[in-house]
Image (cartoon, rainbow, N blue to C red):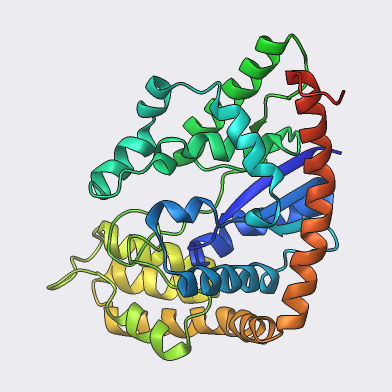
Length: 329
């Protein structure tokens, strides 16, 4: 059975893109592998969140993933800061990570462009902490998107460097988890790119029906008459893509035909799309609210998850310290 590690951003509330994309595969993955799912709350400190916001975000994201089917009985679900062994390995790996290679990472360059007044050491060493998160459990597979490909390659480099420096074959070099088919990509409502929180173009699973309707009605489409037989513009095709995932095929076919004939009313299409999204997300939202209000259950999940994660992590740290030369007298 393969060991798989996946981090969950503590500020990354789930949207339709997550739900129909990677998450569906995560649910399958947890049944077939030894999975560790953790909420990456240390990573979020690079943006200096307020204490109340930090705790609330962790609770919300944990509730959302549990509501969507992540099973703490089938996988190890934990909060990153509950496993101090991660920070020790982070420290040890930092001793063999070089400033030049860290400064060249695409994510670091992008972050310092976005937050020039907050270029902290955590941003620079972000790939090292990510590597520690993964190899602390000696994982062989990591489900990552294209935007994280460079970080995974750096994780492989750090694992390889450790093995080479100490003449051991201890850490595996993890590969990207192959889901076997192309992930579903849900576009945003702004007419460009994928759906995401930072882009402000998403429908979130915790959104109430009224909010979903408002967002969909504001979604970008075309202005002016539709040319019969014309190809849908990118924004309109984006709405058709979302509709193909949440609506009945006959509904999609109807509006495709209306567009082809040049008589489509985008307002009607949006109203239908909103109701179809609500039909799918409302049961999930209700589960999110129920779980987030059950503090005893959440406490049980994270306590048991931390215990299982620390059992794995402490074994790694014990063996790594021995390899490096930290031994008792």
